[in-house]
Image (cartoon, rainbow, N blue to C red):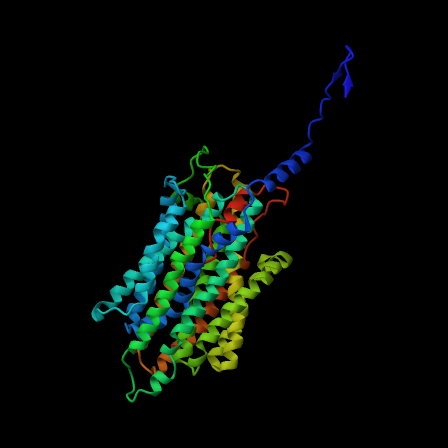
Length: 503
């Protein structure tokens, strides 16, 4: 205390805070504000489980179901897969457009989209695996429900992943909530293929053909159709259960940026800007090849084990090995990305190449399990790497343009990346399945022609190999994007990291 000339005590004037002290005080205040409870994080993570469970089952088993149970031609299967993927790709920018313009309701702005899509996506998923009674229209039946499933899954996933931004203003809590989501989604991916595979394992056993006295095509066993319907019902139930827990445990807060000034770019205008940015263009082109290779490998591995080798009884265990190794190796890849850099870690994707060729040459059970383990490790880094590199690319764009284009450009980077990779998967799966029709694949047959066996070997070895090597070579060419220093504010990067799923 200081004494005035009148002898009274005058209050001391506190010295102003330094910039460093102000930053520490602000960071401490932010860390205390907007904390999410453990229950909220768990419920938020559970909300992402159904889409991953369903997508995992579709990735490994849908093609086998359409060819051998629904018994539609390979050409029709090609159209179903291509049409569904294109619908999913087109739904991504549409979802962002409509959701960004939706009004807040009593339950929030994003939650109504999640809850509104839930019953319809559950029904679409169930009927996707239901054996249509209209034999002559089965191709149209499965095309319709696969397109509906892909589009509704996008309208479910986009608001769900963006929901973390409206749960708390605290960046650390957002990262923590996202970590819970990623953990639950990985568990959902593992659960989907495991549960679905265990239920339908009896529909594709070797005894199905051994008991048949006539060569060639066999009739669809009622038990096989029932098994697939049961598996579909079990997975479909996860949508209302998990969405209910999400609604009960998560409370959406008002969006603080809803009244922010500044008009973002339209999708087409922003797309024209982003595709002219060289690091982004290089990243997208490289992962067009890599992601398509991963999807082809996943889709044809089960068909290869069923029709091109004597691995009928190992299909479920091989798929389980892939998923377990992918889940377990993800933390290791995260550490390697930080330790050795992202470009060096990209070579880990190439690990699948020699082993895929080995499986095509020596299709035995021990080789299949080794290949499955290595495939899971490579798939993990192929999924993790682009979402780790995208923030660097966007930061590099912003450093060059210095906020010249207003808000919303980060979302355009992400949505356009998802759009292009879905299109590449659609083209790869459509063309490769069409090749089976050209070589005479017979739906439901116990023994396929030698040309079909050779084609399946090419589809799990040579095709992914060429795509992966091409993608990695493109990724290695040219300079790396500039990354801001660690002391640079990162709120936009945090928003980008929590806006889209790995699925």
